[in-house]
Image (cartoon, rainbow, N blue to C red; front, side, top):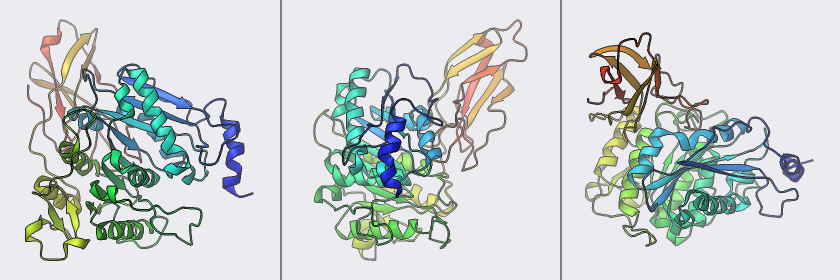
Length: 442
């Protein structure tokens, strides 16, 4: 029996309760909220056949949300599970908070080896489930505007298919979209006959898009499992750009399908797009991207210039929204080492309970949090984590899973003092360290 014919049967089996590895998501309490939808026992055509949960973080103190940042995991059981921690990511929260947005992370409970297209094509029910979740989470969080605010989309692999598909089916709702290692199909592919191509509506041409494949996904490594990623990205870019779309490409020079250091360009890029497009008045239409500071670059190149200085054909050039993003893009496509000379925000709410220090911290928007330095009387007495690591890129405090989400179980901001006798909280100081090595101030 073909796999897609098995899925209604699987849906019925999965209806009662989540199965491993989806049975232990991080617990939620305000400002986090979660909804979960079971798989239907007998799915109708176009109905989502997998269970799914959506976790959202709402910035404390925001009276009216201006948008929602969606962090969409990729295909496969492992990537789907990794989506359970996406809303807890401090770096992505910093982006959302700056713009008065919520941060949403879905987790589709896809069985091992099931057909990813059954969720990563939003026309197969995941698009409708997403909008239902926004309405239900809006009610649960006291922010009913979640059902109508704009979306900033980030997607990895199959999540890129999903985010791109949402952009092409709901372009009036999308402020910007970042597609890591996955794009929607625009033309029929005889090798993937079950995938229905999308069409390009005129409204999608106004949505800023950036495609972000790894160089080992068909650019410099032209065989293997992910060799088709670059040809798909190239075709998508050319088809969209030929119609005038605001689309660029940033080839990761270090990676294959893993996400690497992409967040250090993706977050500033989305920051620039949200600043330009989100309406000042909630409920108003998205604003058009300004054309005054656009930079262009040749496809496959590493240098960008202001659009009025570009010597080639602008209709086939990479589009970049402004000078600051273009300069970061040039660093990224060279070695991903985007500089950041500014210090991160200092930690807050330092507390001493017995021999344990705890604190809170906001991530550096440009460079995130690599860790914390603990001082007593001006002398360093410890670091959290003691030995930071990250198999996919720069060491980062929360760790990093394959789909760019925090490691599970979630780490905490705490430090066990070897000897706290005779001390008080004023004797201690905690400094944040961003991923470029810059410490916070006092």
